[in-house]
Image 1 (cartoon, rainbow, N blue to C red):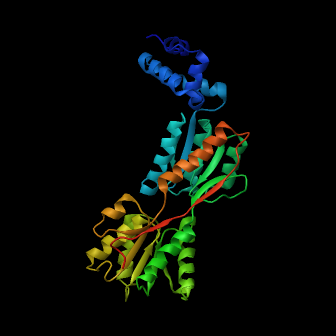
Image 2 (image 1 turned 60 degrees about the vertical axis):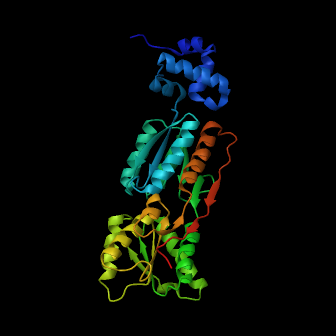
Image 3 (image 1 turned 180 degrees about the horizontal axis):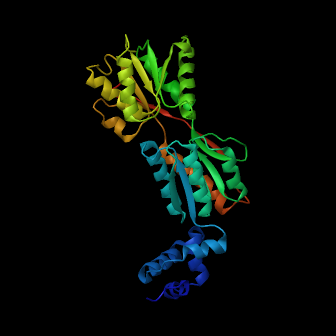
Length: 334
């Protein structure tokens, strides 16, 4: 079987081999009409470049690594979609690593990224040793934090203001007449859970209430199953809170199922609000009020910063981007 070379592609497209190389490695540098001719020739000839050889020559690949905490959570699925779409537009491929909230697994993912000589890494940290990220930067691998504020001034990061989101949620519950509010959270090690709790406390304080009134029920995971277990815990107590704020929509959907199965009316008996505004929130038995995060835009913005640093490190300026969440009111709250 004859191997198709870059020279063959160049001859068919009527361009130089260097132009073909630019289309493969820096497509944004090539005029659209020329890029189309080269890509057509690539398809017609069935050209496949030797990835490992080009990586060895350049010292890196046209790939980036993405490490998330839980790819089963629709929040991270939407973030990943934003990452992959922009990376593809810029001629990059994405290697996905799912840490499952395990620092040890996260470190293994980062090691694989380094072994694959990725150009950069996008990461939602789950507690791995920060020296691991520093080591990547020392090896010339750009790093951008996703859904996490910057830990140093020379670090790009894209996050959402979770303190403001927690405040929005509880302010809405109070406006609906809530008196006894409980917060169904995830593990204390997850920064977002703590920030949303702080925001909830600020909303209570702003309403002249004692933040200590807020009951926190921390669950070992942020899943629907954990939310249903939280509902069972609350139902076993003497009196249900009249409003519940859940740290994400998966928890809220599980709580909703547990309450409805027990005959509790939502929102007549208990108001319920989640966080993230995933697609399932509007499609549940009682459509779920939620705090919306711009998840897809979060992924694209982080990737834009990463690829800017990868492709033009000399002029790249580190940025810390903070998105603001929005309140989405549906049937589950008064």
